[in-house]
Image 1: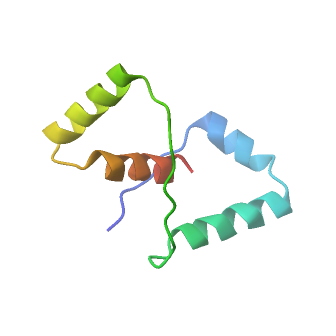
Image 2 (image 1 turned 60 degrees about the horizontal axis):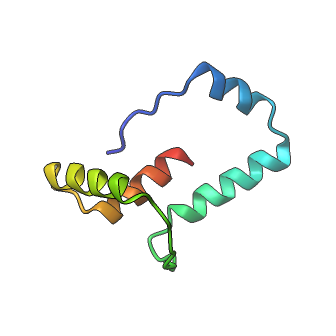
Length: 78
């Protein structure tokens, strides 16, 4: 079961300005993102050590793997 998403008024106003092509592109990207067989790609990311340490610590407290949490946050943001 997926959680309910709440959108800000600013985000909804921005969505109203999207062209048909932009909507189709977004929906296709979202559909592809949901496919479990999608290949993964390793990336390199520079993050301040203090931010990464705090993020990893918070993930440990919540019993979540930090790389998994990064992907969750990316999916939520998209």
